Length: 103
Image (cartoon, rainbow, N blue to C red; front, side):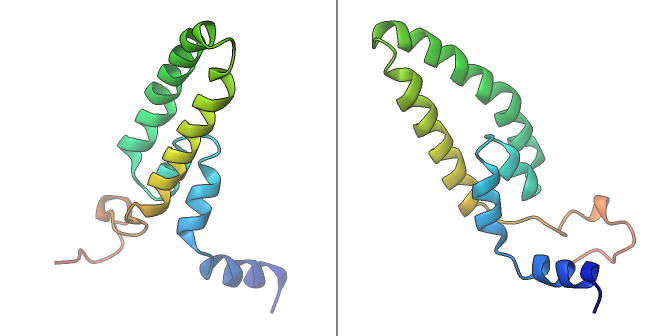
């Protein structure tokens, strides 16, 4: 067995839920990994921008404490969401035209 086959075998047995949660260190990437494209892009673009804006405003009122607490809470909530989402890997027929559609 060559190195590529070993890596492919190990990757096929990996827990996709844990990988999605780990990838959510950058919020939204875990959702994209599980093929939730609209939610992932929404979190990557809109959610992260809104988080920066809210954190900047609240940091003025909390003497900078919000700079630590809010991003940590946001990342943990997004990671938990990515962990418990249904995995759509291989279920988008439009992305896999060579497969027969599931009915």
